[in-house]
Amino acid sequence: MRSRYSAFALKQTDHLWSTMHSTHPDRLRSRDNVIRELKKNCNRYSYPQLEILKVEEPGADGAAYVTFRAGVLDGAQAVGFVERSRFLKEAEGWRYVDGTPGTP
Image (tube, rainbow, N blue to C red; front, side, top):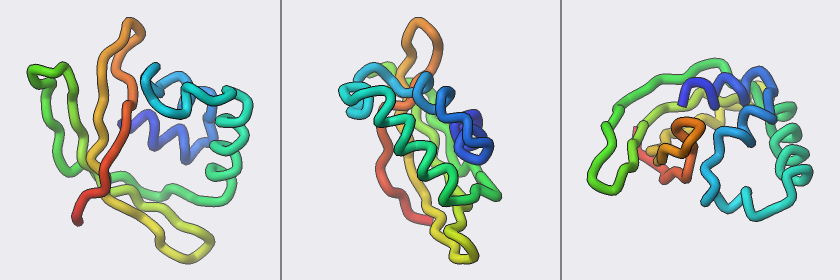
């Protein structure tokens, strides 16, 4: 989770792509198009702070969850959010599957 947030902050879109689980909907799209959209978002927003709120170890389904508060700025406007992200392990390690909005 931290590495993905840092990748947004540092505009490391290849890392964002490589840490998406093979079942993530963006993996069904053209890699070039996804990278282009990620670069656009990385350039538009700044990412000053990440707070991990809860970590849930893998359950029977193999999924691990991380709930976090992302500090995100669009210029001077705060547009941060809370998300509960789901991760599944693949041969290369833990990969981001999806997330659901959380409450602060």
